Image 1: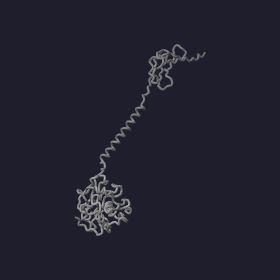
Image 2: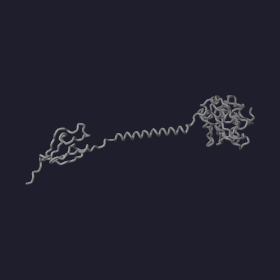
Image 3: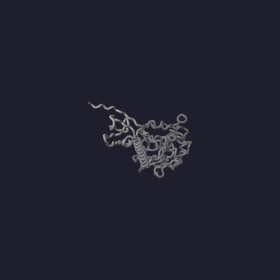
Image 4: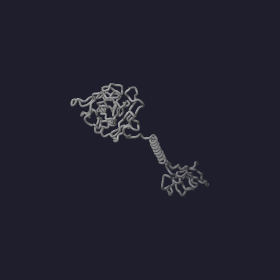
Length: 311
């Protein structure tokens, strides 16, 4: 049984006896014990509600860490419900808690002779922002005691009731009513998610970078192959030297406007003849890349009259 010295005048529960802790302490007793004395402030006694005029307890009037904890909120709300009253919302309860409002943790060690029920560690977000006695009664987990170690900390059997992976009680040895020793961390509920390892993140980033680089290199090679063209062909036509003829060399270009062989002087004529016949040339003309059929095999002559000799 409990050896904690509770103040007189604390309200008693008529309903929801399932909310009592393992030491037989009511939510009203535990809520009163945690409301201020461990933090060095005056204890707020949860006296019986004046039903039906008063159906709930107000929140703290100042920014006090012990009263601004969601654990204290759950206990105070349960005290009102077990008397037949109502619970106010968490947002309304913590309206005066500017900086010290805490979710799922109590800022001091558990006083000796006291036990905090596991359902008190539920986060208000687990029950839509207002204490839910049905959800609290469904928690099947051991209470948090001053002598608890991390191996015996309370845990919820239903993962939906806890959204935080850890609930820590911070230590303080400044008050005589606080259990001495090192801080006692209390964790409630299973861990819902674990962060990805650094190796997995780095591996994914490196793999993505390699894929992007490979795509860029492939696009560059493809673009270069599209722009690649055949080297220009510059064949030469050699004209043989014979009696009365002169040797000329003409460089053919596939981009020339006309595909004509070189001009030469005829021995037995007074005209300069441009011969474009494939058979009249001393050698076969080169292939023309711009034409699939090649040069014509017919004979065409362009005769230029020669000036008469001076007399």
